[in-house]
Image 1 (cartoon, rainbow, N blue to C red):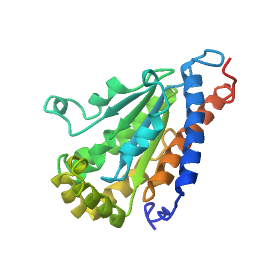
Image 2: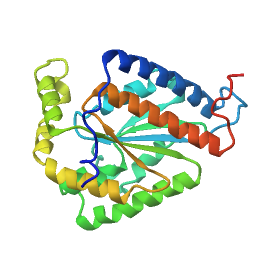
Image 3: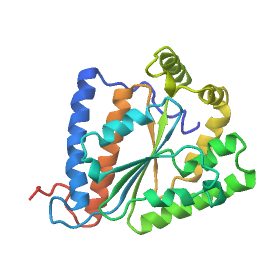
Image 4: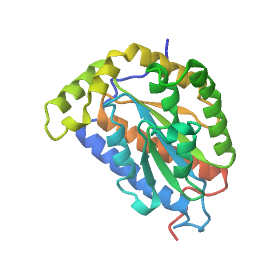
Length: 254
């Protein structure tokens, strides 16, 4: 059975549960983020935190990112979105354009789409040769292993939704004039290639899940559940990283 097939897409939270659990997780994240940045506690800088988001179109990446950073001071987090590489970016190695946004010690960055485009859309759409995207698995793992060795905490999310829920969201966007801009012809074309993308996702999860960068597949059919799961997972990653460096994640503010 594939990893995507193992995901329980029936996971749900009521409106009340979702609101309460999200608020608790966000408050915990505020505390942990300030500890990472040295704004509270001993003042020692914690490790860089880099959160990567990939997922199906309309899988809730944007909403999850919004809830992840909502309660943080905007000076303490950088959100970067990556679309198709530009003409100039294509002149460089595919990883080159991501370096400027990677966080330093005490920093946090959230990437909406990432270097995994090489083994997803570029693979399926033929924008990269097979030799190039096959080679990219090792190049990506080497990059992430190097970052992890230097202390970076990598949290990698694949936001997963069923074909039925994706279609419902597509149609909802299509029928809403204030959200229709989110839906493109390319989204519909990608949906028609779901089987090919599923194969690419399964290969990605299998070949780039490693000690320095584990994948978390988030059940996304229920947005409330997915958003809580994302914030909690990031909190747990920070807690583990701080503890491993001898920093008490429950250190008082002063």
